[in-house]
Length: 219
Image (cartoon, rainbow, N blue to C red; front, side, top):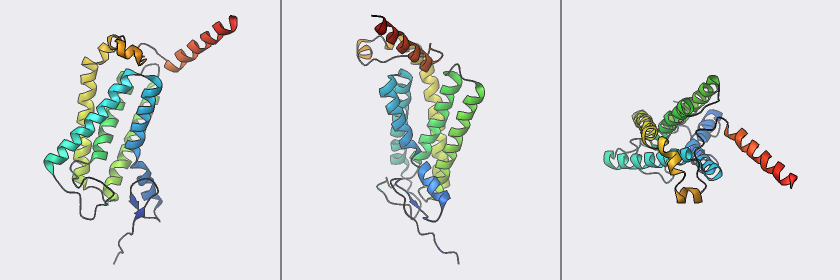
């Protein structure tokens, strides 16, 4: 008879893994992707004050709220023996899977429809990487015992639909108004900006810095 896998806590990653399985440890790291992504978006927003990033981050928060509502309405429990590390007892739909679905679709739409001056193969490479990361997170939610396959698939489907709807709603309503929003007194105070008209933001910032340095040295 095959012995049951004895899983142990894996570092700071809030998951239980087989200590002898490098693959499970890799999935344990991947499970933290939603937290890393949210931290990255928050840091990017504080650094760049870009309105697109603010809309993107807000979309993820709305998506999480939708997940909480769905879990409270459906009230489907997690599978028997699911790890208990402070999670909600409800498992339908999987919040990790819904997050990754939203992220995959919204980020892909941003790359394909908003980002300019980047070659197509780099965009497709980024989309492929995000798809692989999403697959790793989804597989980990099942293998590590957090969710059933239907909970993961439904979560991913809801997230994809939410990400697609949110992007095209923002594209129709918010993106065209970014220039006007950036001129609001509060937005000016917060140094909010819309860099949609700049082909290469890093080059633009570098050139502006260089011009400032030259002006200072010439005085």
